[in-house]
Length: 172
Image (cartoon, rainbow, N blue to C red):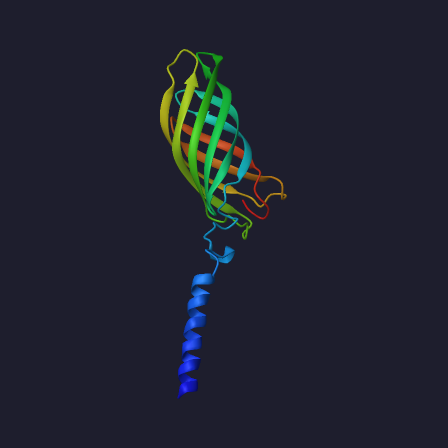
């Protein structure tokens, strides 16, 4: 009996010491976002045909930041022109969108995306307009460096664009 009591007491003391002597945290226990969720910048270029009151075209550069494995926060700055009263007039834009990806890991040949956000349109002789934007698009597999795509959208008129985006490795 004395042996059993001593063994139980020794086990309790050992467990108590282990609890109080442990490090404050272990690396494996820390909550860290997975690599696919960490913000990464993805550059992009695009060319758009704009159909509003007038026909126009713009080229844009921008990029996206990964907000989640299938969600990108996108910003674009574009310049171009519209044909108005028989002559071309300069235009510009600034777009901020959230874009959802149906296949962020490029498991399929084609990946659908949809987005929405706000934009500001600048046109000669007009005050800047703030607009709501909605887009849908499809992206191909790409060559590993750039992913081609086509997007259609509404926001201050109809927009049809060709895109080239630079993804992370094995991603869209």
